[in-house]
Image (cartoon, rainbow, N blue to C red; front, side):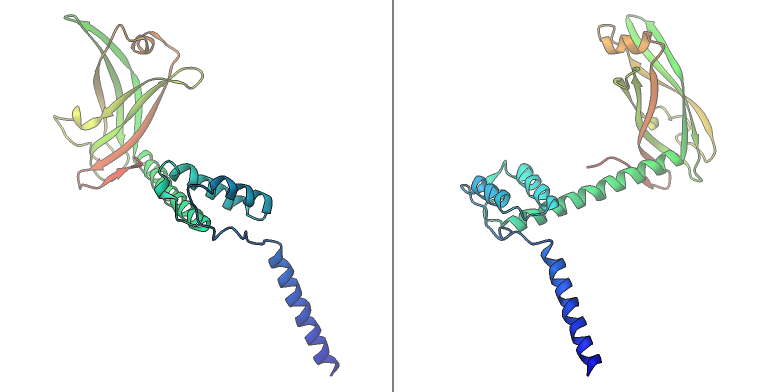
Length: 230
């Protein structure tokens, strides 16, 4: 008998603990409230006064309103919880895109090495050119037919002075592929505008940092890796 009573007491205590834990995170009563054109401000005040909505849900709700509220039809008629769920899914999809971009860039970097050699200015026949010279090594086990990115020239503060777009296939015409483990030197021409302050800074400054920022790599077997978020 004593054991039975002890078990009952224990169960009651556990149920009480579970209930009390649940009460520590109460849900807002306004989650089911529908949005209209005229209740946004008053709804926000009621949610704030109630002081029950989680910080995460507040951020999701305000994010949804901020993103979709430009078009009233996108939010009117939806409940607070609808908007929270919509924003949560939007951010989830953005995280997926960011993940794909970062991992794609990491794979591109792992499969090639690029070394900036320098810039060779050339003024001839009334035209000015800046030739970027660099070496590319194929670190993969497949032939590369395209490599796209930018050489970015930065000042001492890390500010981009100028970015030069590179599409390797445009100058890799005689031998249109970079074979596995091959290293090749390339010379990429750009017009130089003497009236463009940034062109002049890049040509004449000696202390600029040059950073290679790759975005796309394509192999001859048609495999294409892109870090561009669309």
